[in-house]
Image (cartoon, rainbow, N blue to C red; front, side, top):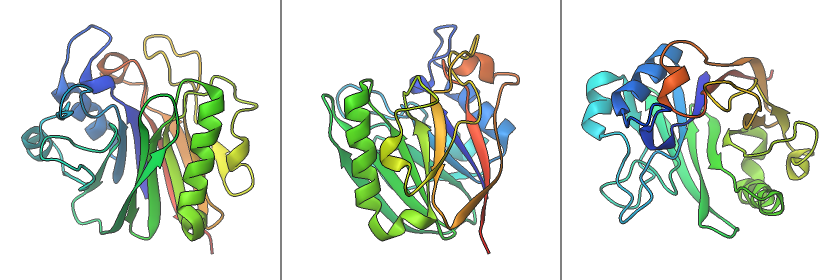
Length: 224
């Protein structure tokens, strides 16, 4: 199963144009089975979707997982998950996360894999608490879980300690800033029942302009 993760910055490109169709073009270019988005909803009021649902239906083969708690958002705390039509979602969860600002993570069980989407905080002490909370709330689901998102950690040697025992961390490459990538803010942490067959950063075409982050992707399989 191929999974992509993308902080779309509310569909605002580096050219200061809000262009939802351009985001969808990038997702089609990657061709993932599951897509995890951060900043998929606007921040104010009822948090309306940054990408209209009709456009998703019109331009892609994806369905939006029902994570929103209202009729206008795509996700929860800006975290959304799309799945390709025909893929079975058998469970969803929402995880409240501690921090100075409201944060949350989401989970969808897709074809037996617990796909988690998260956008962690800007301060490391809160990121560590948020990682711990995700780990604890996953509980017995950890082994079959794959956490994707904008982890906001600027170091590639420390800052992930709460996940070290239960997950394998992979940072596929430099994903920020999209115009000149110099740091790997976006990553994957996967449990012991899963294997990572391949991973990378999507750098081609519109991905350089559609957001300030480049999307990452991973090909996952089950061990044994």
